Length: 429
Image 1 (cartoon, rainbow, N blue to C red):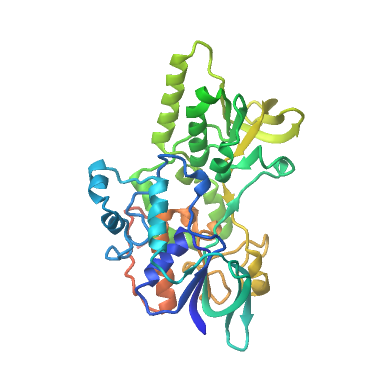
Image 2 (image 1 turned 90 degrees about the horizontal axis):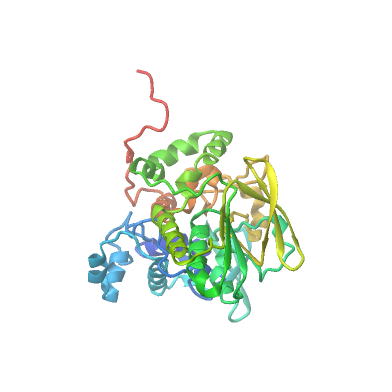
């Protein structure tokens, strides 16, 4: 049996694709090595919210009539009135995860506990051959497909200088809740990184500080702890208008632009920054001594050593001076990076890569193969698609474009001319 589409990885983006494909007569199957759907479970800190509104669910933006909308989930769970009374557009991560689990439970094409080991091209059948191991039954199976949609996501970005040390005491923020229970009372903990995850982890530790007698450091190489910009004109940078403009620019110019856009996606939401400040103020009012909390900007981790504690050797980027911090735990809120999956190595010659550094390049229709219509990429290729590649609200729109491309016609009518701004030069009349 040959499939029309095989999806590899079942995170929110490919789950969105699977949900939208339920209304199409296509042979589809999805694989993920995890035993069940889980989304950032290591960061499911109480009351942390998404940075996109509930309308940016798995399907609503392109098909509000779908049975898989967040509103329908609330109705099915008997929660819709309480949600309305709460009068908030934003849902917690826990709520979003439960919603995704509810959607996943209804889609038969999803196969968890299945790991893809290799993707090759079958010349005889003129299609792709996907080798999969069923982890439950320890069986290897091979599937044929015309199209592949990659949704394996990115991996934690861990500084190399930390890799030689204990993973129990130095770990990425994505593992925070798994490790938190083992943190000893009276410890010194350093959070490295000033994005949303870093802010959430720091606030959670700060709230627990009095009870656990913790000493805390929050350190960033950035010159300030800044809020993510959320003005209405900024939101237009997630529109098709901007994506089309950005994708047409030369690669060096695209990379230059991305390096200037940290404030659009790497900051902390303004409410969390205010809450952290208020908690610091509240704790200081209750204590006679200065709080055992250091918040440091423009401070780059250059090296580290270990004796009885970890010594973090820092450089202040503005004063150009060095200093050290001693810590028992180091939590790396250092973001994520994309790696080309090993299972794609047999088809490397079919992938569209930058000749200089080997990074994958995506077309405007989200394909990464040289034929421009076979292998689609979710949440990757920032160089090609810009900073919105990881934006949850972008998932349904991107999937609608992918389905349109596979079908060969515009099944989903995607809004154009959304932005009031003109991103490129005007034509001279």
